[in-house]
Length: 177
Image 1 (cartoon, rainbow, N blue to C red):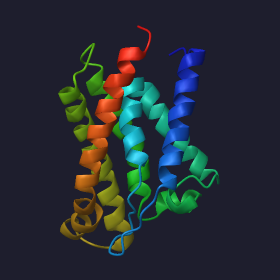
Image 2 (cartoon, helix red, strand yellow; image 1 turned 90 degrees about the horizontal axis):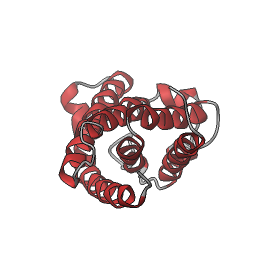
Image 3 (cartoon, rainbow, N blue to C red; image 1 turned 90 degrees about the vertical axis):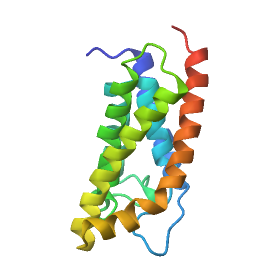
Image 4 (spheres, one colour; image 1 turned 30 degrees about the vertical axis):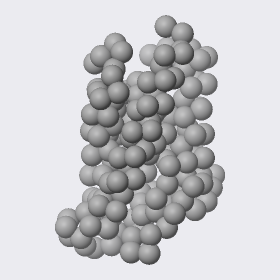
């Protein structure tokens, strides 16, 4: 795959936007996982950049954080974050963006409804990887991990999907074909 300058800029933009989304972090007293805006930018990366470039933007974001840039939630950084209780969610951004992009690519001009379906599938990927890591880290079962690592975030993620799908549709309308 040959990358154009515009592709590289778009990948860098969504890596940076995901990092900015992590700065908005609301801790929950009953969960190791905070509320952030990272997923909204992951959704948009897949919807606007497609499968490979969307995933690449998230891979670069995760690698920058692993290398020590304080761009994860609460300004954290390093491999320990990726190996910690929230690491599965962070790692899930990569295949999550890929799935969103791959599904969005099925339609030339995906509708708002189709993008919501794509984003729901991507969110499921993020949740599965996040719950698996959370279970391993905290030593809890699936039910407990879902209660603290999924349920508190479903309404917020649904709102982020609505916003991301809306913005993606609007942005697609003004992008050159």
